[in-house]
Length: 261
Image 1: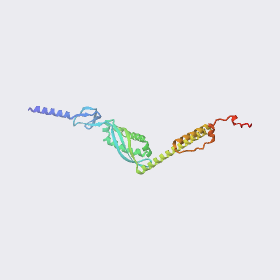
Image 2: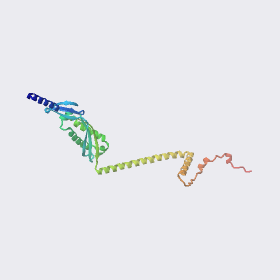
Image 3: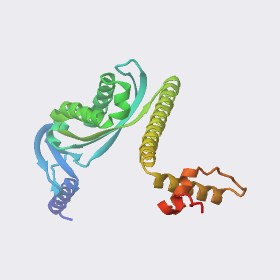
Image 4: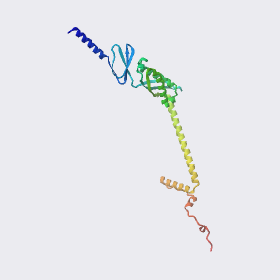
């Protein structure tokens, strides 16, 4: 074989392999950071891309939302209660160039800043706020973490406190407090019911006291209820005033004494 042709074939094969080695595919959820001799050379959008092997280097950056678990952190609340709190942080990269060039590992850095911020925010709230005002605590965490990570090209979407672990002694104290609160509410409701019942009875007594017919109807209703619920014979003394309503009115002639013949 001609040496010249062999050399040309070798060069051609090397060029083909070199070009094939420079083919890169950037996925839809990625952006490619191109470094040429260590310096930033451009940003590749999704699709089939080409770099110069040995000269260029492409660093893919994932733009999808990441759920970062923040491990349990021991902290002391403002009212001196030791707690263990964990959370989850949802973030994403919005500026790929900053996420690569301004910080070495944005994922690890976001994790560390989330842990320190969680301890700091817990120390600025009372225990009742951590348990009942969870949305305000989450909003404060998100604001602080997002401000810290903004220069890295990272946007914090949401922060959620997952669990607040209390000491056993504090759990028992909270349980006793909750039980006392329930008993207090039960007594208040019972007292309100007794007061309303007394007011209704007083109103009913005023109505009945001014109406003889109402007294009679109430008496008859009581008889009906007793007859329905009791199987024994019950004797009620009947006042003569009640029977007057059922007796026909006597005329003046009937009530006059008979003449003696």
